Amino acid sequence: MPGAPSVSTADIVLASIALSMLLAGVGAVVSSLSIVAALAAGSLPASGSIGYALFYNPPVDSGAA
Image (cartoon, rainbow, N blue to C red; front, side, top):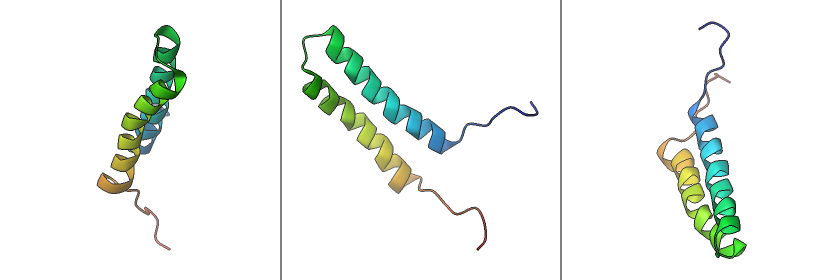
């Protein structure tokens, strides 16, 4: 489809970091978990997303210098 924005891997990684922290925060609000414990648990998948983006599928320079 012309003009449709494309979603890159970096966009998905950024969204997954935000989503995991958002879900952890919502989980803390609706359960008896403390906010600190919930966000600490939510940081584990967020850290995995960052590790994936940095080490498994690192950014590459697409332009020649």
